[in-house]
Length: 405
Image (cartoon, rainbow, N blue to C red):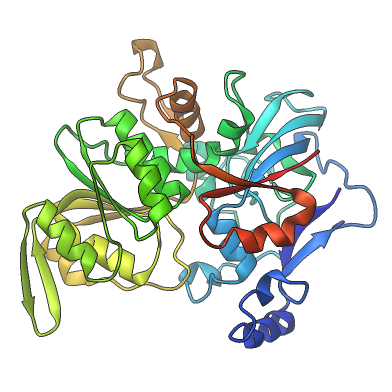
């Protein structure tokens, strides 16, 4: 087994950060925090009866994993949680089950599976009974024990991985590998939309045209076809893909422009005084797929009274918003940490009205071709050239996929 991981190494990270101004790619070089190779000198074995070995086929380089590899996540409150010494990268992955423990019941050898999120400890992986409330309600990404060191080995950026059966989703036969490798970000998009399904005529804004932002637009188009969808992006290739997906308007994402264009589209009133801007009116629901101080501030400013702001991207830095806007306009801000338990899709049959997993919702949309992935995967690189792939994924790429022979 060979894998890609990062380790806690303050001196190594400090040296790389010092060199970064003159060598922007240092964090992805051999001097940076990314390690490629065999994590143990002996063959990795299944740590328990409910663990599974998966041979990877394709893996996507997503924004969250790339930010971890580059050491961009700093200064947020979440960083206070004890970090594992070794963190394996690659949550967007599809592969085949090659070995199962004696107590595995959810999958079997030969099944095609995907990870449901970043491999972290949960009540299931720790064999804790009774499970914490998030795990008991189908939201293991929020597990109260996720700070416990991870017992598995590997993730998507490697030739194979050892994970707990609860962290795998069985891929429907009708889905291609390309659709499957996008299931995890598609599930996050579905979770974001189902926080409050837009009603007919509602105006929605997606800030950021990255892969998750585009999947959000496609999911909105599929699940709330009567809603107005606006995408904020400055990238030409992102705007072209969004136009094919059928978004209603595309506006610039530059500071200042997004508020001006967004207010004009929603016929909102804009007031300015002493360097501050207040927008009266705006969008019913806003999805922030960038996770920056500027993007979240714009989202809160452009949300109309009683509106909803969904934070989809993990902020790389601690962000600030104007609390007076949240209080006076009674704005709700919610986050999306990963796949979880959802209300049923609006067109679900009567006997399907129970809770659904985000992965099942996304798989259904892809299987019924309500979401098209044409144009999403723009680059393919052999996994053995992982460092080259990481450098290539930084700009002008919608989704780069690692391939395994």
